[in-house]
Length: 431
Image (tube, rainbow, N blue to C red):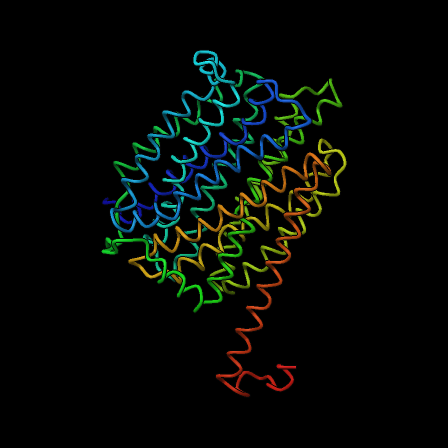
């Protein structure tokens, strides 16, 4: 029995998505524990952890848009392959930052900064192209469900990290756990080179098509909404992964009997629970997007995410079972915020400049991560560990309000075109 080539390519895409997510999530998840081992104290833990993430996102900001354009010119596969290779080499050296620093006379934390920057450049060459490839491999009709499957593998990779891999430091030590990203990056490079296939025609644009992208944004309010959602929600799991893990680890200072490794494992269970909720709800979101609309689903995702993040701000003891209640809403909302904005952006992207449009989309997401992580770091240190979550939740509510305006505007346009055929009195509607 022959295998459908399209299905084989999609299966390879799913596996590469999971491997890339394991890499990116595990690098972030082990960061607070590794820095704690290097002697980082609670007083500036929020700032340092956030600052590292902000610097890597600034570097991403320099590359992500242009790499999207290069993927239009030369293909997605070569860029992804070399991104995996760079990530693998750097990840293999990262656990030895202290020793490398002593060898060259540099502080171990400074070496870790450099390693994280290089790993971030590598991952920036990979994850945006995976989203663009999903658009290449799909049509408008089957795109929501294909993105749901890709999102499922994304959530599966993240859930595997927190539910399984972050339980391992207390058994095998942090160094061996930090070598897992290097292994996954090598596997990702091999799969990318041998099993993924280019689908989109190569662009002839000699420079980044900035004017075309801006014209598209001015023309399509739904695309503007998707960009705003990327700005607000792309940082959500970074906020959870970074500040929730940091909160748990340093909260353990108040409970010596718990210990930092055990606290990190408990945090991993909460984040893993969020990932599990995303996993279970993604098929529903794919169905919802397909049957009820992109904008409607995006707005609902923002509502649920906002409720979850602001609810997280009401938790006093993160080690209590109450943490799982807002985590449930975060997971439900994040699944919608993962699928709907990307589906909208891919739908509205011309085929020959899809990489450039998605590069701009991801650039806005990087700006959002920098904005929320930097402010979140200050809020974590100066107000409370829950302040970054409340700030994120309020921002999601603001995007929800814009989504409602887009829905009202679309309904208004339909009524204008159809008159009384839509069953509404235009004068009343306008009031």
